[in-house]
Image 1 (tube, rainbow, N blue to C red):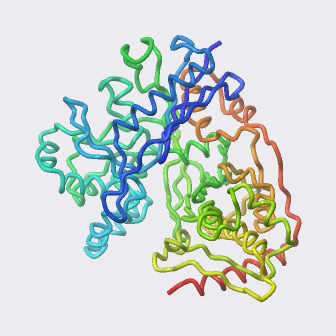
Image 2 (cartoon, one colour):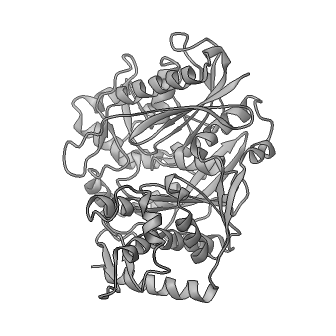
Length: 492
């Protein structure tokens, strides 16, 4: 039997998952790696440690399943997006630690670009906002601050990539320097209309085009794994950024299909079809994936504090012993007793984009207990997601029929029921929870004929449970109105 190996390179750990032809997980291995915080607001990773941890988990997963290199049909890669790596083309050595997507050191660069009136140029061409979140300003910072980096770059000696490009380079022993369209679309350097690197944007950020990887479809053969790493002939044939990969893994192939990943934050993507939808409601327009010559686009909104609010209740207030206790505690009361919790610990993300907002709890009375706070925390995750999804519906001009969910917190039945109640649409939870890794496996498998078509991928995405709304639309609207009142109080 042949298998597909998915490399799932995340922000805090590297994972490797083996899938069989039925789309089932045969083995999983995971290894955390060190986070570096050299200054407040700075976050870095060691690219070599990322590579080593990814190799280690691949070997471990294969060992657990009793699988050898010759049993791997192909490899798919999915990765933390926007994290920026620059390395020397000759030595293959990084010139600096990777600057992570969470890093805020380029806020001044973004502010200067905005002051120069370039924000609309970036937004119209890339669908993104001028924010330190994205790769372009991180790359500029490296060229401006690492000794000799700019001169080396101008002489064609340096290569830039997001983490997928770095892994591809290492897997092929430096033979391939490429990325896929979904990762390219998160750099502030890629024109999502012409589907190419944009010379005007490169000039604005003073970045040599020679540094950039070739941009390829998300599903297609990228190259072969080097003989020193695995059996010759093992191919890499699928790459996508983690959130786009989850959208594909959830079989959101039709325009209007949406998924929400409930993790530390919440990431919501809606497939908008073959044309980019320019958001009028402060969402991001991004490339979902490209297969053959067909490009699919998506609208995206990020909730900064999702599951992190549960961690806060556990670690800072001591209301629960472990994160999974939140469901039992919150279920002790039928509602929040009028309590609303806006967890704007680091400001508000989409659709507000207010960095000055701060967390607030409203509606406290003498009868408020810890169960009410726990339930209000779960509702906060759902209200934030609801506002992003309503913005998506406005941009698209059509309501959605259902929401697909994934991420660790989606195992919480009460959370999923609250989400369905507030959305007033069914919430679909898959049996296969490894949707991000499965998306990369599916893109890779389709490219080499392991799976034949999208119908086969959809067939493997079995729904474990459907949550239907249990409150009226009027009640949902009333609760949303009170939530919005609390949000306004959180603003400074």
